[in-house]
Length: 317
Image 1 (tube, rainbow, N blue to C red):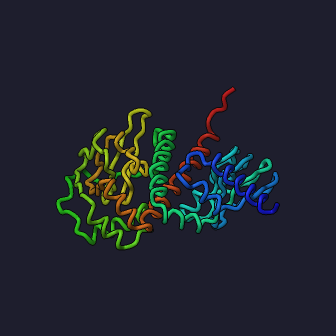
Image 2 (cartoon, helix red, strand yellow):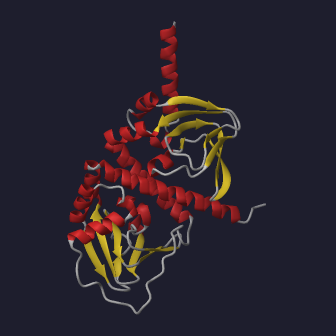
Image 3 (spheres, rainbow, N blue to C red):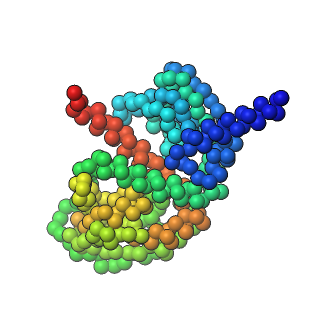
């Protein structure tokens, strides 16, 4: 009898996981996640975690309503979420908000360390997460037009100048890559591989870096100077400086193919072929973690900015 009850419970848990898998669905993930996870329940008013807590776990496939409250934005209510807290785990950053149960909530708790080990063993899932998340980040940016939620960057004072004359040597390339947020968690071996892979573009003030449709299969990173991009519909203009991905993390999912990019000061950019870059990611999980951390942090920042702006938007009658 106990064996039948245990078997029935395992089946119930796996069905629960599979029916709530949504966008995270991958072959075999439901069964593995069911083994990693612990089912938990919360009563109204219970706190799942608090802002500033270390991200030791996350919750997936929530049934019920939760409130998300952060010092950076007004609180908002979420219903039946695929997951909550995973962005903090991926960003390796203290919790950005306090999450509280509004109704009775049923969820699966997954330890962060187990999930990261799982990603390292299943690169195809990590890669799928990078591509899907980069698209989500770009869609958030478009929703925050006309500035895309990007921080303003001033053009260095002085008259327009020509392109820098000298190419970067290997050590300078590695230093520029190490300073970039997207690569800051990568180990030295991965950085050397990236520096050897990187193509180099030197542009003078006003020079076009790429036009719409020309960035397919590539992404660009600013090594020196300021680059400005323009998106037509919705109308969006943003600038990027040293260490920034041109067009933000959406560039990893071909978002940059929708933009025109031009140098607003003498600039040096690195460009990477996406297939070769993803091959290096597969060989160096530290690089994959670095990319996921950057995307997760940027996604969180944009969500908070969206909620902050929506609180100031005129209310419809």
